[in-house]
Image (tube, rainbow, N blue to C red):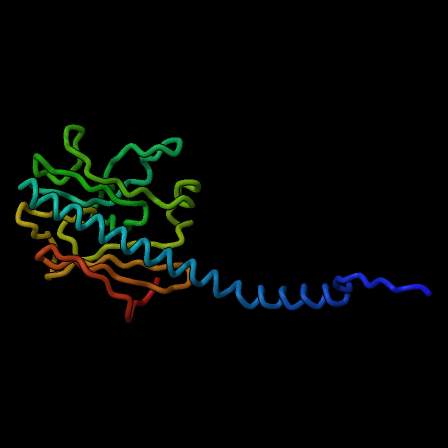
Length: 198
């Protein structure tokens, strides 16, 4: 008499069923994953701005001198390497290209070659590659600054703002936003409610 041997395994129908179910689940999860990535990017950019402002304020008080946070001039990128220069002009409210924090020894509000750079927050990778802020996943604009392209902190930590509070508005590609506010006292805070983007 012959004995039958059974081989353990999956049939092709079982494998295809599992692959179809996995595909359906991946299709359902992909938009939520993309949404989470965008939300994290917005939160990260918000935290970077708050950190830059706090570095400037802390160093102003610690060193007993004036410090400045200014919008980085994207046009100064040559071959992917920044020549650290602040954006200039009366209408430069766009801070998407990044920021520079520096000690303003001569109190003229501009970054000179002899002044100490405390921190540079460069633009995101997609902005660096394209050379344009229009490719940014998160845009940043500023309002209520006394000097449109920069915010200054005095040796006592007080910020130069208009109307009591300066505002940095961050918007992502899904038109969700957050704000970073800087009070005249120099304290920075965040808000994610009731933001209209773009």
